[in-house]
Length: 77
Image (cartoon, rainbow, N blue to C red; front, side):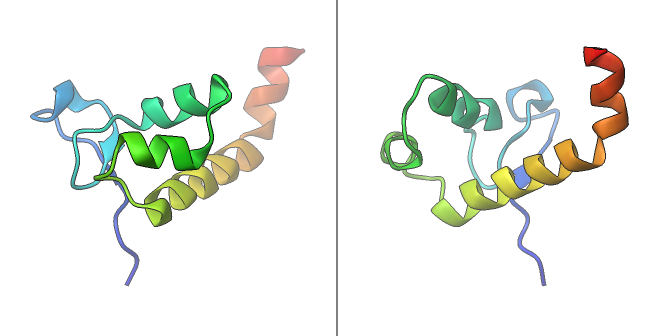
C-alpha cells in the first residue's frame, strides 16, 4: 500500500498542500531548494517531515512535469 505524502484539507492552512501528518507546506521544500539549501537542511528545520516524504514529493513533481510537456511548450513558446 502506498503511503500518503501530501494532504490538502481546507481546515489545515486553508487548503494549502502540506506534508501529510504535518502543517508544513510543500512550497517550503521548494523555497529551501530554490535558495540553495539542501534537503538535509530542510529536514533539520522541519523534523516532522521524513526524508521519504521529501523524495516522494520530488518524484511526484518530476512526473507532473514530464507528463505536462504540452502545457509547458504552450507557455514557453
